[in-house]
Structure formats: structure tokens, C-alpha cells
Image (cartoon, rainbow, N blue to C red; front, side, top):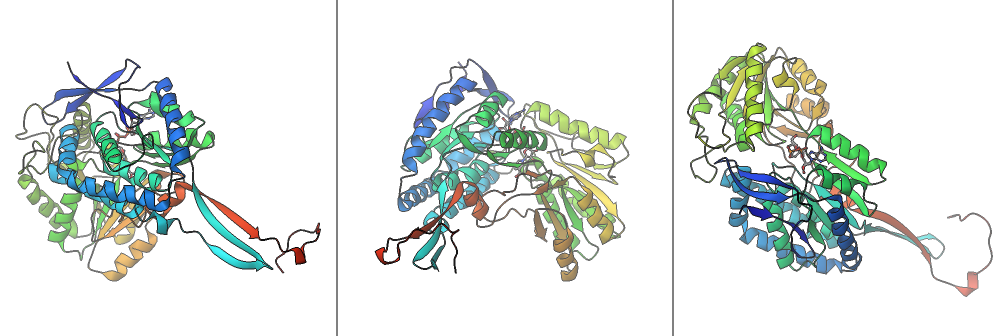
Length: 496
Ligand code: NAD
């Protein structure tokens, strides 16, 4: 019988009752490895009711108790990285070192959140009026939910749950149904770290579970990471229900390569950022904008690197690029390559050709030159191992191209000119910017988020903005009774 991947409630695996499941594959073999339960709205109700009870207790846990759980979790995550990376690779397909990399970046969020006693310090003002003090505190929201994409089954849940739990909330994770096993491994680790049962819940599911979480009266906030159409709809539905929502969407990240750039270094960086994780990263560089005469040299340098990249099973140590997540997605990406060629792009390297391993959802690396902004390979997020080169006459033209794009997650400039880099940082309308850094994912003590169609809501994820998102402020004005000054006063309170 095919293995069943269940929910996690009250500190244990909980079989589903909906009767609905979705197949989970090993993308490197193409074999179905398990079926994941898909929760009904009724099962979501049960999960939320349990989380409500857990949240009531957890908000009473002292800051040092919460911090202690995060320290313990951090240690376990460190010790169990290899096991967890193997789970990620088996369902996502990315190479083991890349899976370990996402775990390491998630771990940084746990370390940040472990400083919750410092992070939740409020303000205090003594003597705002005679004998009157004012202080601010931040309190948890209650039950919060996180809905996460397939491409980072560990890091993105940790972006959310580390801060949410540290702030005293109960957290319900709805992971991607394409690679759900990591969520249960995280749940077991929270339990082993001493987190009380019910504070971390996993509801497996699809849009039915998401809809139930979004409309549930007892879910106070929703964090979402995924594609733009779903992010927009999550934001609209959740906020219409009065919830706090942060919804991060898709991306089309540009590298701007100026004529003075070190072309070999830029090519190394762009190839790493375009094809790492088979291009299934929201911070992947999928467009290289080559300014002026650098274009031919850049295309040659990019093309020279591609034959050296080995496509294969992510568990093999010499593999650079694993398979795509599903056969449908592989075919969709290959379809974009065909469309690009038909629409007039030059296929410098065609990833559909050549020797690819059989069985899994593999696609080779594609490099397209002379791409123009009307082509679908440019307008759409492809989310695969495809790099488009657009040629621009000037820095200004390249900048305008980036600023005209509806997505605005990440970007990177490659140059030796500090003035140009400073101007780019100032003028570019994108949320995360790299200067000679190809994948500028902010460290855990900053916050992650794009602009425009890459983020719906006001709040970026993790870091200080994450702590604010998972708490609400309260301001207390206090005076201790002094019989000598007590009198009826119907005037509006003044401070002087
Ligand atoms: P997706 O939007 O298909 O799914 C994301 C989540 O939403 C999953 O949990 C899924 O079950 C759920 N979902 C899917 N369809 C839904 C629907 N109709 N109604 C309600 N919920 C639904 O995204 P994906 O394919 O899993 O992930 C890839 C996408 O995520 C890419 O667009 C990528 O750019 C984006 N992404 C963005 C960031 C970021 O930080 N901005 C990070 C990682 C991934």
C-alpha cells in the first residue's frame, strides 16, 4: 500500500478523514512515493479548535521558556540537517547540498527568534504627566497560519513559524502538497524541543484547506508564500475577513550587467543564480540585461559554463541540477523554451536536447539571447532552468526595463563602478537588491520581501517586521493612587 502522509495535531501524526489525497512523487525517478492527505474544512475546524486551546496556554509561557524551546529546536535542526535534507531531496528533487543550504538559512531564523526576550522589549516613558508613566507592550495574536510553496519546504515554514511561536502564538502550517514530508519532520522536532502539544500544527491540503483557514474566525493572521495569482487572492480574501495578511508572490529577477563588469565573475554569479535549484527559486535570476558591448562576451561566458553543469538525481554528489518538481511543470517549462524560439529569441543552449537521465522530471539548462519584452519567456515567471538575455543600449534603458516589470522581488547589478551601483540601489523599484551579489536573500535580522506583484500587504517576512506581524501593540498609561492629588476632573487629560 502507498505510504500516507498525515496531518499533525496535538503533538502527533493524525490520519485524515476526508478521503481525499494527492500523489507525492520522487522527481528524480518519476515514481509515486506516497499520498498526502487533503484536509476538509471540517478537519481544519478541528485543527484550529485545538490550536486555540494551545495558544491560550502558550501566551503565558515566559519569554525565557519560549527562548529555551527555540534554542533546543535550533540544536536539533543542526543535528538532524542531513536527515531533513534527504527528505527534501526525495520529494523536491534539489541536490542535497542545496537542501542543506535552505535548512541553514531557516536555522538563522530560529536563531533570530530565540532572542525574543530582547526583541519584544517595549518602550517606557516615565512622568509623561505628574505621576503618570506610559509603556508599550507587544502581545501575540492567538492562532496564526502559514501557507507555503513547494520550492522551500523547510526554509519558508521556518521564516514564519520561528517568529510566530517565539511571539507566543499557536502556528498552523499548510505546506505544499507536492513535498509535504518535511513539515512532519519539523513538527516532530518542535515536540522534541519541548514545545507544548498543539502550538505547532500541520494541516495537509489544497485549496479547500487554504479556504477554510482563510475564512476561519479564530485564525488571526495568515502568512503566504507562493505564486502571484494565489498570493493576490489570499490577500484579498484574508483581509476582507479582517485578518492580518502578508502574501509573497512570484518573481522575474533581473541581473543588470554593465560594460565595466568583470564578465567572468558576473557569468559565474548569473549561472549560479539562474540554474541553482533548477531555477525553482523565487530569487533566481531569470533575466540578464546586458548593457552595450558586454553582451557578446557575457553570452559567450554564460554558454561556456553550461556544458559543465551535470543534470541528475539530487542524491548523487556530482549532480549540479536536479529534476523539476513534476512532469507537468517540466513540460510547461519546455513549452516556454519552444515558444521563445518561435517568437524570435536565439536559442544559444536548448535544454530540451542532449543526454538527460531517464525516468525523472529532468530538463537541461537553456540560454536564450536576443529576448525582447513582448516574448512570453520574458513576461511570464518560468520557474525552471531557463536564462533569458535581453540586450540594452544603456544603463538607463536597463533600469527602465527592470522598473517596468510588474514583479519586483530581487535584482542584482554587476559593475566595478561604485557610483553606478549607488544610483541603481537608489533608483531601482525592487524589494531586494544585490550589488555584485546574485541572490540577495536578506539575513535573518533584516526582513524578506519584494515590491509590486511580488508582495501583497505591508509587512515583509521574518526579522523585525516578522515580530511585528505576529504581535499587536498595546500601550498602557499608568498612575498609582496618591490620595493627596485625588479630585474629580472632567476635562480632557492633558500632559502639561
Ligand atoms: P503555488 O502558488 O502554486 O502554491 C503555494 C501554496 O498555495 C501551496 O501551499 C498550495 O497548496 C496553495 N495553493 C495552490 N493553489 C491554490 C488555490 N487555488 N487556492 C488556495 N491555495 C492554493 O506556488 P508553488 O508552485 O508551490 O511555488 C512556486 C511559486 O512560489 C513561484 O511563483 C515562486 O516565485 C513563489 N515563491 C515566492 C517566494 C517569495 O518569497 N516571494 C518564495 C518562494 C516561492
